[in-house]
Length: 280
Image 1: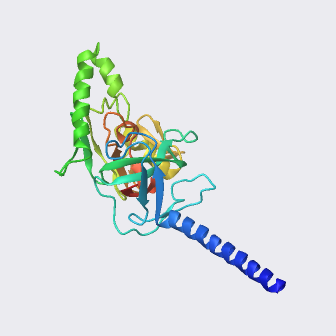
Image 2: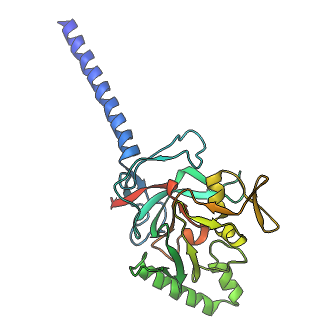
Image 3: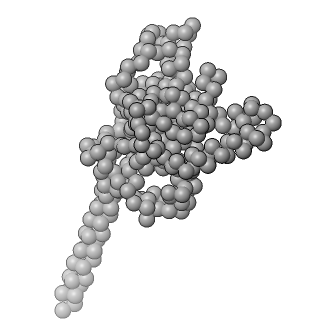
């Protein structure tokens, strides 16, 4: 009798452990390949998404990514499974923070533990510009981003200009990517800037290098150097560059208070986690 009870308890424990392991495996498979939840820490997407909201990110839409999280992730280390759609204008996306690389000068670094959430306003192959704080893609007539917030930013800039002591003070406050003397762009008036797509070839000159140099260095995992107006990788002269992947321009819906592509540039496709489909 006692042996029978012990056997039943043993089988019960084994079954619990078995199904617990299955649940854990299923949970991680779901997180990696299907969807994941993220808690929003900032107000950059207000009023669409508020601080503290949880969002469900669809990884199947653009295809789930597979890479080794235990090592430094470089271009080419990320494999993306086939998705059922491409990123579209006005999609809300989650992506890894495209921070500056401290090992390779003027390059990007893949931060596996930090994520941003923004709205895509320009796609690979688009020519994007900001005119009086409002977003435009040449040849596209659809509203881009949160237009009401862009109206608010325009009013904010007018108020700032009225109160500021000089235009220089206003410029310093509004200065945007690429933050270079040859491109006196601001979040009020920026561009036009071409958004590279996979296979695009551009002439490698000083202006293109200012705009796209860190993308090239990220893709090549090296530093392109300039000497007397010519560009080199090591001792090899390069006169043009062909992009290896797609890039995107993203903005927060809170146009007045959002750190986004207006300040730090374009997002590589490899960095994109997925599309926000639900706000929980």
